[in-house]
Length: 203
Image 1: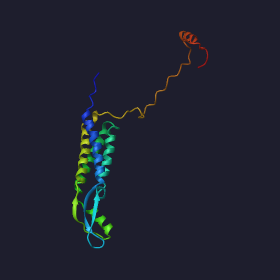
Image 2: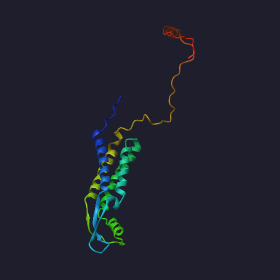
Image 3: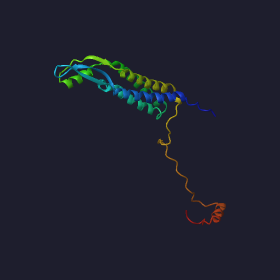
Image 4: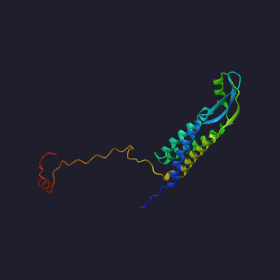
């Protein structure tokens, strides 16, 4: 009898911790200020300080982080080909978070929209743009998701899956054995009499 290969615990732990931490970092970063600047005030005097969070700039990193987190859980709910598919989805989600976060980090479009709504000036010119470090933090979270996906692709075939005791199979459930209605053997009759039972009574 061959012994099944041991579960690679270190890649499994790294994937779980890295994927969960990466998704949490991206979601937290999306709510922080990514870019800020100065726009003309309504009165024309002074300047109006405007800020834009990651979700103001783009919703994609947060959405991809949720997809990646769902894929991380699904890795342990499926087997074989399904596991490779969700592992690939996890990897792509992490890569997408990183790429989008870095691509839009200097985009001032969200600031212009907020400045226009606040000041009432269409196409308000926003100056003195300042980028924060939060897009880079979100990109790092995306890299953690990507790493988790890569580990799942490489080692996922040997990882345990959720218990199949609640899974429905196509085969009908075995029926419980019922007492035979045929004649009992002599030793069974004596045993019933010793227990004080009537062996001739119907079951």
